[in-house]
Length: 162
Image (cartoon, rainbow, N blue to C red; front, side):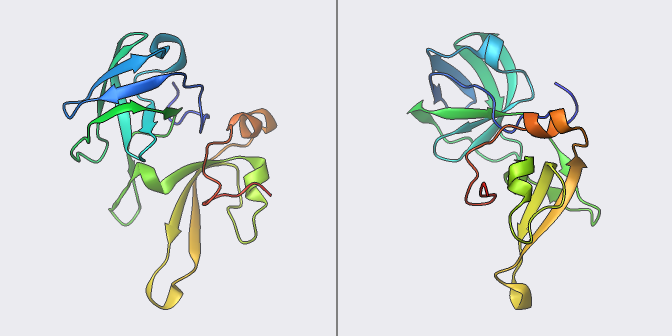
């Protein structure tokens, strides 16, 4: 996987059981061909975890990118993504994985949305700017092939397809 990857949504077959220690046991999964160490595994409940090891098609290990407690799940559907593992913002704050989205050319067309396809940080503003959203392009994908390859994750509430 490159430093940033270009897949917001990778093939992810089967279901997973995840224990609180980060051990993943899959049912009809194909970790060795579909996933890579460093990919994000997001289970259906919304918990995003980084794959730290892959043993075989049905066994892997994950960790929380924000050093949070891992919630155990059983029989959960999941998705895979090549989001970056860690990002620091210019104001010395950390950008969490849940704030970063892969945006393809179609999703760029939303009104007042991101200006570039690529990895985009989305921040809902508060205070006097409540109801507004700020977009910051972290890595723009400049080639047409890379923009098209971003794939489309289930993020239509943040980035609707136009």
